[in-house]
Length: 274
Length: 336
Image (cartoon, rainbow over all chains, first blue to last red; front, side):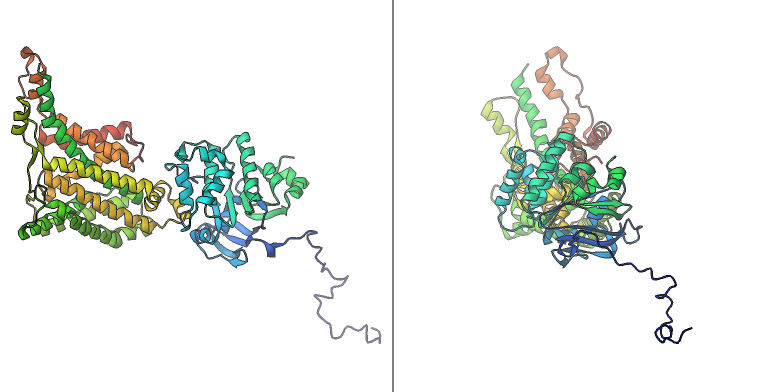
């Protein structure tokens, strides 16, 4: 004990911040890149929840976002909750925690139909077309909530998917798998959505058709519509993605640009097969 | 061999009655198939819905007749038809609000809705008998025949006569008009397309912003119109008796299932398949065969496969055969 008043520790007896051997509190080093979640056009923020009010949680503090003019892709192993995460942003899940915001507006409590009216377009993985109706009728039904003249939007969809124009009077159920997916995407585009959600658009189509579908999706994105997409074919999807989310067991495991994730050795080893 | 007389006899006793009966069944089956496609249950109350609509038409016809309002050669019932449709629509929409909507909100299984519709059937059944009584009621008036058998014989000089009743002619014309209107509505209008979309894929219809309650309302309106028209045509052709309408349920369901439940085109085809089988199997073929076969092969009996009392057995048999070998029906409807 010295007489130096500066060395006696009277007045600060809080041992939690004066542990022997120095402090343990570190400064955050940051993510080394901009996250921009405050600018995200559509963001499902720290979502925790599952199907139904009593169902077990499938998502755990999961965040996915898509910015204007970008393609965001959700990848991950089977049962990781990829589709679930996307459905959560579309209001098909009971969220216990977290929020969903579209263009700065909180839409957490809106029903899926109300979200369509707000400008979200959703293409489910299966049963995403009206099989007994013609291609043109499918598109008309997509525009059901619009009361204005939608012929110009239909012309745009036909420009985007020329094959649909040739088959517009055919029943959609008679088309091939790839063409059906184009009908499904076209139907969702008819509301002129501000953001497009695609649930495994290439599920069950041949590799050649898959390449074509990816090209089409890039073209849709070039028209300025942000796209949030769940994909089984992680490598190809990440190649076209501006942003990728790797989910594992309903939580964010890795996040980054598509290129970063493709280069990340851990992601490569776990999900891309080396 | 006398082919001409054979054809006339066949037309008179088989073709004309079967076409008229088939049109009535087709209109009834269209109602059943629409309910099945859109509300997703087999509506057992359909026969009694027809009876209720027809009853209102009968009452209005009597009222018009008492005031001396008629349509000349056409039956007065055609004038009363719109009132029957309005009353029937009010009944089914009221039933939907009070009964079916509750089960729809519970997302009840179709089998529960079927049983519920049976309850509704008994109530409607009682309601109709309470108002008009259980007996036969005749309400057809106007000209009886377009061509009577005697006129036809005089015109052509054949042995056989061909009679076409006014009600048969009206049945076929009305059925064609109603079916054309229905198909135009379903295929050309925005509301009709939304009904087909809802029937095709409920979830996607919801995603597209189609309001299910709206679709259900329009469906009941159309079903009420179809049921009243079908019931009135049947009543004009034969007579109106509440119990007969309850019995009609069987051939109507058989028609809808044979055609493929949920397919409007199938309902029409099914109606004619059932009508033609019923009439041909219960018809005594002796007359036609006498004209066709050489004299020494003339049949001794009536050559009637089944007595007309068994005509419902025919629709039952066809129903069972279709369910065994082609459960989705002729036009790829939904399997039951």
